[in-house]
Image (tube, rainbow, N blue to C red):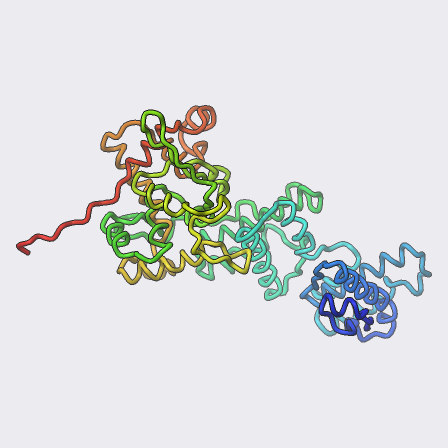
Length: 451
């Protein structure tokens, strides 16, 4: 079938003169039934283009055809077509033809979706993404989870429908794709979490029964993988020796300044990349006390939004980076904007850091593990480690809960969650500053003149 595109829409939406769509059938009877739905779809696409709406298409041809049949059957019901000419009657012939050519399962998928007894796996994905307000990397991860499960279902010839996903099928997917595939448990759990979130939303909106989430208790145990000689798991803080080497060796901007700020604040790289001038305050109290801070306004978790005292060792650097800039300007202005929403503004700095630390010989690659045990996040781990050591060595003015406030961890996940987490709120300014100032860069070791 083909529909002519008006010249005005051709120019504005860059569409061809004609929109064409092949009818997914070789049956004249079925074609006569489906053609009006296809024409309506093509006309709607033209109207969407006229209004600036981007239209998508279904990748699975059987699902695409089934949705056409579903619309045709609905139209028949609304118009009261005679029973001997209904789309439902024509569908029966088409299902038989698909069964002969593609097999019983594909035919059942066609019939199930067309008759409304089966729902395509990703029918409600857009509504779910929109309601949950997923963006950037989180949105990309959620879509990736649906995509890899969908691909696996097609490969295994499993019906790609919501109703077909049982707990047994979900468990089979986890075992075959993640466990047998040698994928790290943390990576697997990220995808399983996305699938579970989708099913929870489906239940919330009445598309499935409340207790029908097959992804519950499917998560893999993290921490059972290989460990280093120090007994720590897959990731670790930098050692003081590595910190000294990195701080002295990384000189390119903005990476050098980002490393220093991360080490002396515990901030995540994505948080640093999004810092704007308006998020920093340079103040001095009446008694000469430094009251300078920077604010993390959004982050990875609910606890991420916080105010962090500026460490005395990074004060001049940050002040210089803010001079002459507008309030909306980025502190680390050198980072280029990314063309894709799923790619964070911090991505170039993260990649540059990998190259720099490897050139400086700072790496910890374990056999059979793809990622190094040290990465930019190891600055955050090192900050926490040094703050803990300061407490162990008698530092005063802050507590372990203060460290959680500085780095944006939830205090309600730790001991005394009500007494020390929810009720007292965030630690006071003096305690936060005492925590930050307790962390110092290791002094460079001097060479023995007699060596």
